[in-house]
Amino acid sequence: MEPISLDQFIERGFTGFVHSDEIYPLVRDIFTKYPIERLDSIGNSDTAALRRLQNDLPKDKLVRRLYGIWGKEFAAGEQQLNDITRVILIHKLPSARIIRQDRMEDYSAIDRQEVWLMVDDDKGIPQRIAMGLFPKNTSLDNLVFTPEEIFYAEKAQWELQAGKPPRLIVPPNTYILKASNTVVFREKITEKEKRALVHGVIESITNPLLGTSRKTQNYERIANKVVRSLLAFFPSVINENGGINYDAVHNIFQKVRRRNIQIGSYVTDSSYPNMGRYLEKAVHEHMPLPIAVVSTRVKNPRRIAEKLIQVLYNLQSEDEQKKEVGKQFEDYLGIRGIVSDRNEIYRLFKLLKANFEISQVKDYIKNPKQFRNPRTGKPMVDPTTGKPLQYRTLQFTLRRDGIPYACQLRDHEMDREAEHDPRFAHDGGFIQRKREMIAKVPKAVQIAVHTLMGTYRDEQKVFYKPQ
Image 1 (cartoon, rainbow, N blue to C red):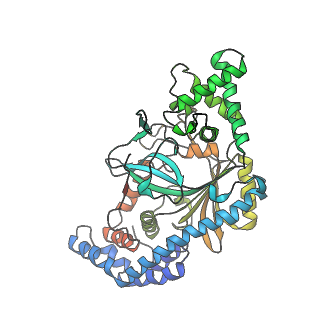
Image 2: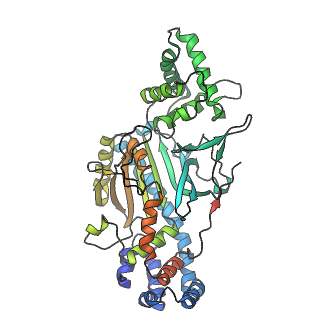
Image 3: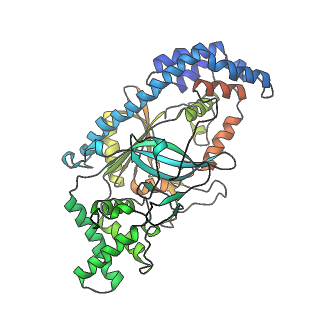
C-alpha cells in the first residue's frame, strides 16, 4: 500500500472546498515540511516518534493558520448550500412543475435542522437511535426529543407519567449529532383546509370502528377517541380551551403519510385495538404528501479526515475499484432532494442538467441495490411493509461556480427505504469496513491528516440529557 504523490493528493482531495486557493498552498507547505514518504516510513511501534508528531504538529504555525481557514471554510460551505437551496432549488421546483410558486410556503417558516441521537456500540461504532427535526437555530445542548419531533424510530421506548411530557428512554452515553439542514416544502394550506383533511381521515374510520352509519354523532365520538388516545404522546393535540388542535393533528398525520412514524405505536385506546391500523390506511388515502424535502449538509471534519486518508492511499470500495480515476473527495457538500414520485425526480434532474454541469450519474432507481444485513448477509426487509429493502436513488455530482455538490434525488418511499440501509443509516457494518481499511494506513499518516483537520484528539460529543 503506497501513498499517491503530493500533487495528486492536493488535486484529488482539496478541489471541492470554497477556499481551496488558500488551503492548497498551506497543505503543500505542511507536507513539504513533514513529507508523506517520511510519515509513511514511521513504524506503528515507534511510540516516541508518534508522540513527538502528535505533540509538535498541532503547534506548527502553518497548521495553526490552516485551522483559521477551516473555520471560515465550514461557514462558507453552509452559506453555499443555503444559497443553492434558496436560489436554485426553490426556483427549479416550480419550473419542474412540482409546485406552483404562489402555493409555496414561506421559506423561513420551514427551515429546520435534522438531528440524530447516537450511541457507540461495544466496538466504538456509532449506532443511530432516532432522528428529529428542530428549529434550525436551536442549540444541540437544549434539544429534547419528544414524539412531536421524532421520526424513523420504530424501536424507541418511552416513559409515560401523568401530567408530564413523554420521556425517551436512551442508553447511557447517548449523544447528539447534527446531520443536516432540512427544508420541507408544502403547499400553502389554510386552517380550514387542515381541519377538512383531518375530518376526512377521522370520518373514514368511523364506520369501520363502530359498524354504524350515524355519521355526525359518531364522528365526534371517534374524533375525541382519536385525540384522547394520542394525548399521552402528543400533548399538543388538545388546545388551551380543551378542544381539538387541528393544526397539531394535521402535523401528526403528515408524519404518518411520509411513514416517518407508525401511528399504531402511539395510539393508547385499548377499547379500539384496530384504531391504529385504520388510521394508517385512512391517512394514506386522504392526506397529501409534502411537495418536496431538501436536506443539505457540510461533511464534518472527522469524516473529511477519513476521506482524505482514503484519497491519499486510494482506498476504494468494490464499486469504486471499477473506476479508472483514483479515489477523489467530492462530497464535502451534499444535497438530498425528496419529491413525490419518480416522474418528478426525472423532471427535476432534466432541469438541473440543462442549467448546471452534471457528472458521475448513478441511477439506482432503474438499477436498484438490494440491502443486505452486514452481519448475516441476508436480504433486509422493510419492517412496516415486509417488502425487500432496496437502495433506490438518483446520484450525481452537480457543479456550480466550480464547486462540486454530491446530490441525491429520491421520492418519499425511497427515502424511507434508504434510512434502513446500513450504509446510509449509519449502521455499524459500513462504518466499520471503512475504518478497517483506514486502520491499515501507518499511524503517523493518520495522525498528520487528522491534525490538519483538528480531529487528532478524541471527538468532543454533545451528550443527550433526557428531561
